[in-house]
Amino acid sequence: MTIYTVRPGDTVYTIARDQGINVDRLLSDNGIEDPDSLVVGQSLVILRPSTVYTVRPGDTVYDIASRSGVSVNSIYRNNPMLGGLPNITPGQVLVIEYDTPKRGRIIVNGYAYPYIDRSVLRKTLPYLTYLTIFGYGMTQDGELIPTDDDELIDIARSYGTSPVMLVSSLGEGGTFSNELVSVVLSNSAARENLIDNIVSTLVAKRYDAVDVDFEYILAQDREAYIRFINDLRVAANERGKRVFVSLAPKTSADQPGLLYEAHDYRALGSAADRALLMTYEWGYTYGPPMAISPINKVSEVVNYAKTEIPENKLVMGMPNYAYDWGLPFIQGESAATALSNVAAVMLASDTDSEIMFDETAQTPFFSYTDENGVRHEVWFEDARSVLAKLDLILSENLAGASVWQIMRYFPAMWAVLNSSVDIVRTGDEDLTNI
Image (cartoon, rainbow, N blue to C red):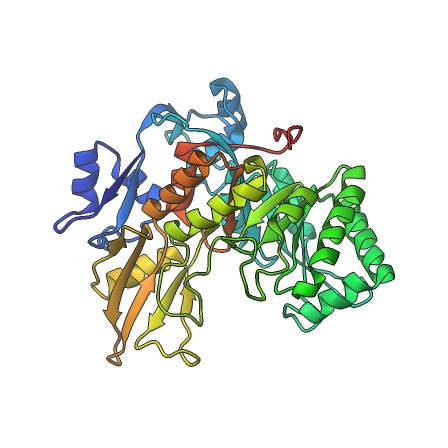
Protein backbone atom coordinates (compact mmCIF):
# COMPACT_ATOMS: atom_id res chain seq x y z
CA MET A 1 0.00 0.00 0.00
CA THR A 2 1.12 3.51 -0.87
CA ILE A 3 -0.55 6.77 0.13
CA TYR A 4 -0.21 9.35 -2.61
CA THR A 5 -0.84 13.09 -2.10
CA VAL A 6 -2.32 14.87 -5.10
CA ARG A 7 -0.12 17.58 -6.63
CA PRO A 8 -0.99 20.43 -9.01
CA GLY A 9 -1.61 19.09 -12.52
CA ASP A 10 -2.37 15.53 -11.39
CA THR A 11 -5.32 13.60 -12.80
CA VAL A 12 -6.58 10.14 -11.90
CA TYR A 13 -5.25 8.97 -15.25
CA THR A 14 -1.71 10.30 -14.77
CA ILE A 15 -1.62 9.01 -11.18
CA ALA A 16 -2.83 5.55 -12.25
CA ARG A 17 -0.31 5.48 -15.07
CA ASP A 18 2.62 6.59 -12.91
CA GLN A 19 1.67 4.20 -10.09
CA GLY A 20 1.10 1.29 -12.45
CA ILE A 21 -2.48 0.58 -11.42
CA ASN A 22 -5.91 0.41 -13.04
CA VAL A 23 -7.88 3.67 -13.17
CA ASP A 24 -11.16 2.00 -12.19
CA ARG A 25 -9.46 0.37 -9.23
CA LEU A 26 -8.01 3.72 -8.12
CA LEU A 27 -11.46 5.30 -8.28
CA SER A 28 -13.14 2.39 -6.46
CA ASP A 29 -10.57 2.07 -3.67
CA ASN A 30 -10.87 5.79 -2.90
CA GLY A 31 -14.60 6.26 -3.41
CA ILE A 32 -14.11 8.81 -6.18
CA GLU A 33 -17.29 9.25 -8.22
CA ASP A 34 -16.13 12.16 -10.38
CA PRO A 35 -12.67 11.60 -11.92
CA ASP A 36 -12.36 15.36 -12.48
CA SER A 37 -12.84 16.25 -8.80
CA LEU A 38 -9.31 15.69 -7.48
CA VAL A 39 -8.10 18.23 -4.91
CA VAL A 40 -4.51 19.36 -4.44
CA GLY A 41 -3.41 17.91 -1.10
CA GLN A 42 -5.94 15.04 -1.23
CA SER A 43 -4.60 11.65 -0.17
CA LEU A 44 -5.21 8.56 -2.29
CA VAL A 45 -4.68 4.93 -1.32
CA ILE A 46 -2.68 3.05 -3.95
CA LEU A 47 -3.20 -0.73 -3.72
CA ARG A 48 -1.33 -3.17 -5.91
CA PRO A 49 -2.81 -6.67 -6.33
CA SER A 50 -0.48 -9.63 -6.19
CA THR A 51 -3.12 -12.24 -7.08
CA VAL A 52 -6.22 -11.69 -9.19
CA TYR A 53 -8.93 -13.93 -10.59
CA THR A 54 -11.04 -13.44 -13.71
CA VAL A 55 -14.61 -14.60 -13.15
CA ARG A 56 -15.78 -17.42 -15.42
CA PRO A 57 -19.35 -18.45 -16.27
CA GLY A 58 -20.87 -20.42 -13.39
CA ASP A 59 -18.49 -19.06 -10.77
CA THR A 60 -19.76 -17.93 -7.38
CA VAL A 61 -17.99 -15.85 -4.75
CA TYR A 62 -18.10 -18.84 -2.43
CA ASP A 63 -16.46 -21.15 -4.98
CA ILE A 64 -13.75 -18.60 -5.82
CA ALA A 65 -12.98 -18.06 -2.14
CA SER A 66 -12.77 -21.79 -1.48
CA ARG A 67 -10.49 -22.49 -4.45
CA SER A 68 -8.27 -19.52 -3.57
CA GLY A 69 -7.95 -20.50 0.09
CA VAL A 70 -9.43 -17.23 1.37
CA SER A 71 -12.66 -16.25 3.08
CA VAL A 72 -15.69 -14.77 1.35
CA ASN A 73 -15.28 -11.69 3.53
CA SER A 74 -11.72 -11.35 2.26
CA ILE A 75 -13.08 -11.29 -1.30
CA TYR A 76 -15.52 -8.56 -0.24
CA ARG A 77 -12.82 -6.53 1.51
CA ASN A 78 -10.45 -6.73 -1.44
CA ASN A 79 -13.20 -5.82 -3.91
CA PRO A 80 -15.31 -3.03 -2.40
CA MET A 81 -17.17 -2.54 -5.69
CA LEU A 82 -19.09 -5.75 -4.82
CA GLY A 83 -20.75 -3.90 -1.95
CA GLY A 84 -20.50 -6.94 0.30
CA LEU A 85 -22.81 -8.89 -2.03
CA PRO A 86 -22.09 -12.06 -4.07
CA ASN A 87 -23.07 -10.47 -7.39
CA ILE A 88 -20.28 -11.15 -9.90
CA THR A 89 -20.22 -11.33 -13.69
CA PRO A 90 -18.07 -13.32 -16.13
CA GLY A 91 -14.98 -11.37 -17.15
CA GLN A 92 -14.89 -9.38 -13.92
CA VAL A 93 -11.42 -9.23 -12.35
CA LEU A 94 -11.35 -9.83 -8.60
CA VAL A 95 -8.42 -9.15 -6.29
CA ILE A 96 -7.56 -12.20 -4.20
CA GLU A 97 -4.50 -10.76 -2.46
CA TYR A 98 -2.52 -7.53 -2.34
CA ASP A 99 1.26 -7.26 -2.32
CA THR A 100 1.38 -5.46 1.03
CA PRO A 101 2.45 -7.79 3.89
CA LYS A 102 0.16 -7.68 6.91
CA ARG A 103 1.67 -5.96 9.93
CA GLY A 104 -0.44 -7.52 12.65
CA ARG A 105 -3.82 -8.78 13.72
CA ILE A 106 -6.44 -6.59 15.42
CA ILE A 107 -10.09 -6.49 16.31
CA VAL A 108 -12.21 -3.78 14.68
CA ASN A 109 -15.44 -2.49 16.20
CA GLY A 110 -17.90 -0.19 14.46
CA TYR A 111 -20.89 1.66 15.88
CA ALA A 112 -24.15 1.99 13.96
CA TYR A 113 -27.68 3.21 14.54
CA PRO A 114 -30.60 0.96 13.47
CA TYR A 115 -31.46 3.31 10.59
CA ILE A 116 -28.08 2.85 8.86
CA ASP A 117 -28.34 2.52 5.09
CA ARG A 118 -28.30 -1.22 4.49
CA SER A 119 -25.96 -0.94 1.50
CA VAL A 120 -23.43 0.92 3.67
CA LEU A 121 -23.84 -1.72 6.38
CA ARG A 122 -23.22 -4.62 4.00
CA LYS A 123 -20.15 -2.95 2.49
CA THR A 124 -18.72 -2.37 5.97
CA LEU A 125 -19.47 -5.59 7.84
CA PRO A 126 -16.69 -7.66 6.19
CA TYR A 127 -14.18 -5.33 7.89
CA LEU A 128 -15.67 -5.66 11.39
CA THR A 129 -15.08 -8.02 14.27
CA TYR A 130 -17.91 -6.34 16.18
CA LEU A 131 -20.95 -4.31 15.19
CA THR A 132 -22.11 -2.26 18.18
CA ILE A 133 -25.72 -1.17 17.76
CA PHE A 134 -26.70 2.13 19.38
CA GLY A 135 -28.50 1.64 21.66
CA TYR A 136 -30.54 0.89 24.74
CA GLY A 137 -31.36 3.53 27.32
CA MET A 138 -32.72 2.88 30.80
CA THR A 139 -35.31 3.99 33.30
CA GLN A 140 -34.94 4.76 37.01
CA ASP A 141 -36.17 1.30 37.98
CA GLY A 142 -33.66 -0.49 35.78
CA GLU A 143 -35.88 -1.24 32.82
CA LEU A 144 -34.33 -0.99 29.36
CA ILE A 145 -35.57 1.47 26.75
CA PRO A 146 -35.51 -0.75 23.65
CA THR A 147 -34.19 -0.08 20.17
CA ASP A 148 -35.06 -1.60 16.79
CA ASP A 149 -32.05 -3.90 16.53
CA ASP A 150 -33.31 -7.28 15.26
CA GLU A 151 -32.50 -6.81 11.58
CA LEU A 152 -29.00 -5.46 12.24
CA ILE A 153 -28.22 -8.41 14.50
CA ASP A 154 -29.28 -10.86 11.79
CA ILE A 155 -27.32 -9.08 9.04
CA ALA A 156 -24.20 -8.87 11.21
CA ARG A 157 -24.32 -12.57 11.97
CA SER A 158 -24.72 -13.39 8.27
CA TYR A 159 -21.28 -11.83 7.73
CA GLY A 160 -19.68 -13.53 10.73
CA THR A 161 -19.57 -10.25 12.66
CA SER A 162 -20.38 -10.31 16.38
CA PRO A 163 -23.30 -8.04 17.32
CA VAL A 164 -22.75 -5.97 20.46
CA MET A 165 -25.53 -4.46 22.53
CA LEU A 166 -24.94 -0.90 23.68
CA VAL A 167 -26.41 0.34 26.96
CA SER A 168 -26.01 4.03 27.72
CA SER A 169 -27.09 6.49 30.37
CA LEU A 170 -29.67 7.92 28.01
CA GLY A 171 -33.00 8.42 29.71
CA GLU A 172 -36.49 8.56 28.27
CA GLY A 173 -35.77 12.12 27.11
CA GLY A 174 -32.94 10.88 24.88
CA THR A 175 -30.09 12.70 26.67
CA PHE A 176 -27.27 11.51 28.93
CA SER A 177 -28.36 11.86 32.54
CA ASN A 178 -26.01 11.62 35.51
CA GLU A 179 -29.03 11.92 37.80
CA LEU A 180 -30.49 8.78 36.21
CA VAL A 181 -27.20 6.92 36.74
CA SER A 182 -27.12 7.97 40.39
CA VAL A 183 -30.66 6.80 41.00
CA VAL A 184 -30.09 3.38 39.38
CA LEU A 185 -26.68 2.69 40.92
CA SER A 186 -27.78 3.71 44.42
CA ASN A 187 -30.93 1.60 44.38
CA SER A 188 -30.00 -2.07 44.76
CA ALA A 189 -33.32 -3.29 43.33
CA ALA A 190 -33.04 -1.06 40.24
CA ARG A 191 -29.39 -1.94 39.79
CA GLU A 192 -30.02 -5.71 39.93
CA ASN A 193 -33.00 -5.31 37.65
CA LEU A 194 -30.86 -3.50 35.09
CA ILE A 195 -28.21 -6.24 35.20
CA ASP A 196 -30.87 -8.93 34.82
CA ASN A 197 -32.48 -7.10 31.91
CA ILE A 198 -29.16 -6.61 30.12
CA VAL A 199 -28.16 -10.26 30.47
CA SER A 200 -31.57 -11.58 29.44
CA THR A 201 -31.52 -9.31 26.38
CA LEU A 202 -28.01 -10.47 25.47
CA VAL A 203 -29.24 -14.06 25.51
CA ALA A 204 -32.64 -13.54 23.90
CA LYS A 205 -31.34 -11.40 21.03
CA ARG A 206 -28.15 -13.44 20.47
CA TYR A 207 -25.78 -10.60 21.21
CA ASP A 208 -22.19 -11.63 21.93
CA ALA A 209 -21.33 -8.71 24.21
CA VAL A 210 -22.56 -5.49 25.77
CA ASP A 211 -20.82 -2.11 25.63
CA VAL A 212 -21.67 0.07 28.64
CA ASP A 213 -21.43 3.76 27.78
CA PHE A 214 -22.29 5.78 30.90
CA GLU A 215 -21.10 9.35 30.38
CA TYR A 216 -21.01 12.43 32.62
CA ILE A 217 -21.25 10.32 35.78
CA LEU A 218 -20.99 12.21 39.06
CA ALA A 219 -17.72 11.70 40.94
CA GLN A 220 -19.68 10.46 43.96
CA ASP A 221 -20.93 7.49 41.88
CA ARG A 222 -17.44 6.33 40.92
CA GLU A 223 -17.30 3.28 43.22
CA ALA A 224 -20.89 2.30 42.54
CA TYR A 225 -20.18 2.31 38.80
CA ILE A 226 -17.15 0.05 39.27
CA ARG A 227 -19.25 -2.42 41.26
CA PHE A 228 -21.94 -2.33 38.58
CA ILE A 229 -19.50 -3.17 35.76
CA ASN A 230 -17.90 -5.93 37.84
CA ASP A 231 -21.24 -7.53 38.76
CA LEU A 232 -22.52 -7.21 35.19
CA ARG A 233 -19.43 -8.96 33.88
CA VAL A 234 -19.83 -11.84 36.34
CA ALA A 235 -23.47 -12.30 35.32
CA ALA A 236 -22.78 -11.90 31.59
CA ASN A 237 -19.72 -14.18 31.55
CA GLU A 238 -21.77 -16.93 33.19
CA ARG A 239 -23.95 -16.88 30.06
CA GLY A 240 -20.99 -16.76 27.69
CA LYS A 241 -21.31 -13.03 27.03
CA ARG A 242 -18.67 -10.31 27.38
CA VAL A 243 -18.73 -6.84 28.87
CA PHE A 244 -17.01 -3.83 27.32
CA VAL A 245 -16.80 -0.39 28.92
CA SER A 246 -16.41 2.91 27.05
CA LEU A 247 -14.00 5.32 28.71
CA ALA A 248 -13.57 9.08 28.41
CA PRO A 249 -10.12 10.08 27.05
CA LYS A 250 -8.12 10.66 30.24
CA THR A 251 -4.42 11.44 30.59
CA SER A 252 -4.17 11.15 34.39
CA ALA A 253 -5.98 9.47 37.25
CA ASP A 254 -7.04 12.75 38.84
CA GLN A 255 -8.09 14.56 35.66
CA PRO A 256 -10.85 17.03 36.63
CA GLY A 257 -14.15 17.41 34.83
CA LEU A 258 -17.56 15.77 34.82
CA LEU A 259 -16.67 13.61 31.83
CA TYR A 260 -13.60 12.10 33.54
CA GLU A 261 -13.84 11.90 37.32
CA ALA A 262 -15.99 8.77 37.64
CA HIS A 263 -14.11 6.85 34.95
CA ASP A 264 -11.51 5.01 37.00
CA TYR A 265 -9.31 3.43 34.32
CA ARG A 266 -7.65 0.84 36.53
CA ALA A 267 -10.79 -0.36 38.29
CA LEU A 268 -13.07 -0.30 35.25
CA GLY A 269 -10.39 -1.88 33.08
CA SER A 270 -10.11 -4.70 35.60
CA ALA A 271 -13.89 -5.10 35.88
CA ALA A 272 -14.59 -5.32 32.12
CA ASP A 273 -13.46 -7.69 29.36
CA ARG A 274 -12.49 -4.80 27.09
CA ALA A 275 -11.92 -1.06 27.54
CA LEU A 276 -12.86 1.18 24.60
CA LEU A 277 -11.08 4.54 24.62
CA MET A 278 -13.20 7.37 23.21
CA THR A 279 -10.21 9.10 21.67
CA TYR A 280 -12.00 11.74 19.62
CA GLU A 281 -13.89 15.03 20.03
CA TRP A 282 -10.96 17.31 20.80
CA GLY A 283 -12.40 19.27 17.94
CA TYR A 284 -16.15 19.19 18.67
CA THR A 285 -19.38 20.90 17.69
CA TYR A 286 -19.22 23.76 20.20
CA GLY A 287 -15.45 24.10 20.47
CA PRO A 288 -12.94 26.00 18.35
CA PRO A 289 -11.72 24.58 15.02
CA MET A 290 -9.12 21.86 15.47
CA ALA A 291 -8.44 18.21 14.68
CA ILE A 292 -11.14 15.86 15.96
CA SER A 293 -8.64 13.18 16.93
CA PRO A 294 -5.11 14.66 16.91
CA ILE A 295 -2.55 11.88 17.14
CA ASN A 296 -0.44 13.72 19.72
CA LYS A 297 -3.43 13.95 22.07
CA VAL A 298 -4.54 10.40 21.35
CA SER A 299 -1.02 9.19 22.17
CA GLU A 300 -1.19 10.86 25.58
CA VAL A 301 -4.40 8.99 26.38
CA VAL A 302 -2.98 5.67 25.21
CA ASN A 303 0.22 6.17 27.17
CA TYR A 304 -1.74 6.82 30.35
CA ALA A 305 -4.23 4.01 29.70
CA LYS A 306 -1.42 1.48 29.40
CA THR A 307 -0.26 2.34 32.93
CA GLU A 308 -3.69 1.33 34.27
CA ILE A 309 -5.10 -1.31 31.90
CA PRO A 310 -3.40 -4.25 30.14
CA GLU A 311 -2.66 -3.26 26.55
CA ASN A 312 -4.41 -6.34 25.16
CA LYS A 313 -7.69 -5.08 26.68
CA LEU A 314 -7.46 -1.64 25.11
CA VAL A 315 -9.35 -0.70 21.97
CA MET A 316 -8.60 2.77 20.58
CA GLY A 317 -11.31 5.00 19.17
CA MET A 318 -11.13 6.26 15.57
CA PRO A 319 -13.55 8.93 14.27
CA ASN A 320 -15.33 8.65 10.93
CA TYR A 321 -16.64 12.18 10.47
CA ALA A 322 -15.60 15.77 9.81
CA TYR A 323 -16.52 19.20 11.18
CA ASP A 324 -17.02 22.46 9.29
CA TRP A 325 -16.69 25.62 11.43
CA GLY A 326 -17.85 29.06 10.37
CA LEU A 327 -15.42 31.83 11.36
CA PRO A 328 -14.83 33.74 13.49
CA PHE A 329 -15.40 31.20 16.24
CA ILE A 330 -17.39 32.70 19.13
CA GLN A 331 -17.47 30.63 22.32
CA GLY A 332 -21.06 29.90 23.35
CA GLU A 333 -22.46 30.91 19.97
CA SER A 334 -20.59 29.06 17.23
CA ALA A 335 -21.48 25.50 16.28
CA ALA A 336 -19.73 23.31 13.73
CA THR A 337 -21.61 21.30 11.13
CA ALA A 338 -20.86 17.57 10.93
CA LEU A 339 -20.26 15.90 7.57
CA SER A 340 -18.65 12.75 6.25
CA ASN A 341 -14.99 12.53 5.34
CA VAL A 342 -15.92 11.88 1.72
CA ALA A 343 -18.21 14.93 1.73
CA ALA A 344 -15.38 17.02 3.18
CA VAL A 345 -13.16 16.24 0.18
CA MET A 346 -16.06 16.96 -2.17
CA LEU A 347 -16.54 20.30 -0.43
CA ALA A 348 -12.86 21.10 -0.92
CA SER A 349 -13.26 20.28 -4.62
CA ASP A 350 -16.44 22.36 -4.97
CA THR A 351 -14.79 25.37 -3.32
CA ASP A 352 -11.47 24.96 -5.18
CA SER A 353 -9.64 24.64 -1.87
CA GLU A 354 -6.23 23.13 -1.27
CA ILE A 355 -6.08 20.47 1.46
CA MET A 356 -3.36 21.05 4.03
CA PHE A 357 -1.95 18.56 6.55
CA ASP A 358 -1.12 19.31 10.17
CA GLU A 359 2.01 17.28 10.92
CA THR A 360 1.59 17.48 14.70
CA ALA A 361 -2.03 16.34 14.71
CA GLN A 362 -1.47 14.11 11.65
CA THR A 363 -4.80 15.38 10.34
CA PRO A 364 -5.92 17.12 7.12
CA PHE A 365 -7.81 20.42 6.99
CA PHE A 366 -8.72 23.23 4.59
CA SER A 367 -10.36 26.64 4.52
CA TYR A 368 -12.87 28.19 2.13
CA THR A 369 -15.20 31.17 1.81
CA ASP A 370 -18.89 30.50 1.22
CA GLU A 371 -21.31 32.37 -1.03
CA ASN A 372 -22.16 34.74 1.83
CA GLY A 373 -18.54 35.73 2.33
CA VAL A 374 -18.17 33.68 5.54
CA ARG A 375 -14.80 32.02 6.04
CA HIS A 376 -14.85 28.34 7.04
CA GLU A 377 -12.35 25.86 8.44
CA VAL A 378 -12.84 22.11 7.94
CA TRP A 379 -11.04 19.29 9.75
CA PHE A 380 -11.52 15.70 8.66
CA GLU A 381 -9.85 12.27 8.42
CA ASP A 382 -8.05 10.76 5.45
CA ALA A 383 -5.81 7.80 4.64
CA ARG A 384 -2.81 9.50 6.27
CA SER A 385 -4.58 10.19 9.57
CA VAL A 386 -6.06 6.67 9.63
CA LEU A 387 -2.60 5.18 9.05
CA ALA A 388 -1.14 7.31 11.86
CA LYS A 389 -3.75 5.93 14.26
CA LEU A 390 -3.22 2.39 13.04
CA ASP A 391 0.53 2.82 13.52
CA LEU A 392 -0.14 3.83 17.14
CA ILE A 393 -2.38 0.81 17.74
CA LEU A 394 0.25 -1.55 16.36
CA SER A 395 3.26 0.08 18.02
CA GLU A 396 1.55 0.03 21.41
CA ASN A 397 0.25 -3.55 20.98
CA LEU A 398 -3.37 -2.55 21.56
CA ALA A 399 -6.20 -4.98 20.90
CA GLY A 400 -7.65 -2.94 18.06
CA ALA A 401 -9.71 -0.03 16.79
CA SER A 402 -13.25 1.16 17.49
CA VAL A 403 -14.83 3.33 14.79
CA TRP A 404 -17.35 6.00 15.74
CA GLN A 405 -19.37 5.59 13.59
CA ILE A 406 -19.96 3.63 10.36
CA MET A 407 -23.13 5.38 9.17
CA ARG A 408 -21.29 6.79 6.14
CA TYR A 409 -18.91 4.66 4.11
CA PHE A 410 -15.27 5.81 4.27
CA PRO A 411 -13.35 3.89 1.57
CA ALA A 412 -9.89 5.12 2.56
CA MET A 413 -10.26 3.94 6.16
CA TRP A 414 -11.21 0.42 5.17
CA ALA A 415 -8.58 0.25 2.42
CA VAL A 416 -5.82 1.20 4.88
CA LEU A 417 -6.99 -1.26 7.53
CA ASN A 418 -7.60 -4.10 5.10
CA SER A 419 -4.23 -3.78 3.37
CA SER A 420 -2.26 -3.39 6.60
CA VAL A 421 -3.67 -5.88 9.11
CA ASP A 422 -5.60 -9.10 9.49
CA ILE A 423 -8.98 -8.46 11.08
CA VAL A 424 -10.11 -10.86 13.80
CA ARG A 425 -13.40 -12.53 12.99
CA THR A 426 -16.10 -14.02 15.22
CA GLY A 427 -14.90 -17.06 17.11
CA ASP A 428 -11.22 -16.33 16.48
CA GLU A 429 -10.65 -13.91 19.36
CA ASP A 430 -8.52 -15.21 22.21
CA LEU A 431 -9.50 -13.81 25.60
CA THR A 432 -7.74 -16.41 27.67
CA ASN A 433 -4.88 -14.08 28.59
CA ILE A 434 -7.04 -11.11 29.56
